[in-house]
Image (cartoon, rainbow, N blue to C red; front, side, top):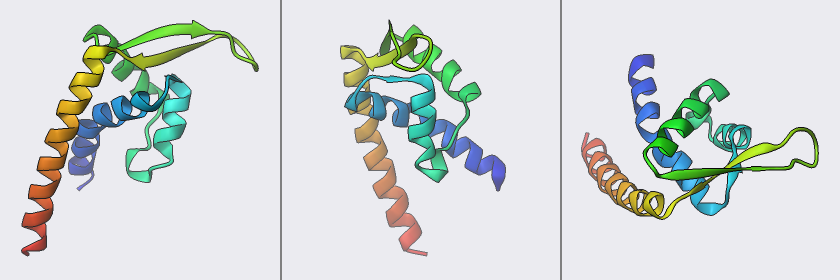
Amino acid sequence: MSAWVSQIRKGVLELAVLGLLAGEPRYGSQLVDDLGDYEALAITAGTVYPLLSRLKKAGLIDSVWRESPVGPPRKYYSLTDVGREVLTEMAGTWRAVDAAITNIVEQT
């Protein structure tokens, strides 16, 4: 069961991160904290930073260093225009899959 849960989480983390970044730019540990607010999406920094790297390489997000009021500068991530388009497509697909699975599960 834990392998199945892990696969589901991996599949939705990209969508969740893009969704959070659509609201406002965030730094890596902030994303970890924000996702941690949702028990099913809780991740570690060791998971989020490779994901952010992949998203940046794909052109879906960009980053900029900003001074921090408490400590060293932080790298803030935000969606690119392409990232917003991909988020819209992914969200539509998610809604369709969610509706289909909900329909199937509720029939049992």
